[in-house]
Length: 156
Image 1 (tube, rainbow, N blue to C red):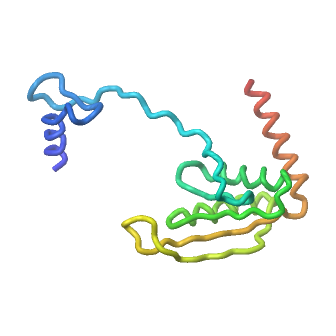
Image 2: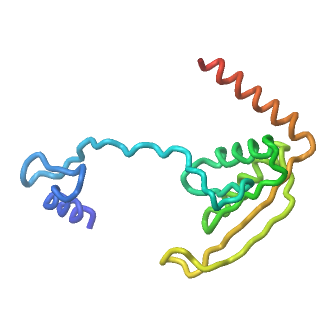
Image 3: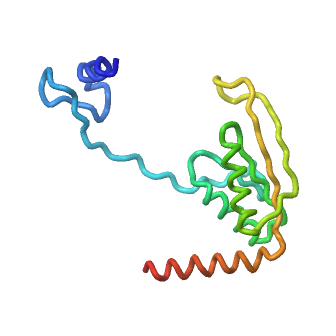
């Protein structure tokens, strides 16, 4: 079946970007195509509350953990970390990373199931975990930021 698929690509090479054949009857070759540009930071969402971190597929869990740390360090009393569907485990992983670093304590956890937004699922599960600064947050946050700066200075 796979070879049939490849053969059909060779017949329709003009309709498939990046696939071509050097001569008739030969197997298709893949041409170098430009990679799509990397996504930049998400634009601000005016509908989202200030203290909300929505975990998604596009970024590493460390990005969401850093965002949560910075929100708390910049005066946010409580931050909601939320996720939908199969990403729920990533939201839990973000919270556990922060707890293991001694930065946050969980103040509230809420789960729900609502109407799905895609055709594959009739229901979508959601988790929302609210975290607050743990005792000693500022000292640990300052230590991490100092360590990060020293590492950046060494790389330059």
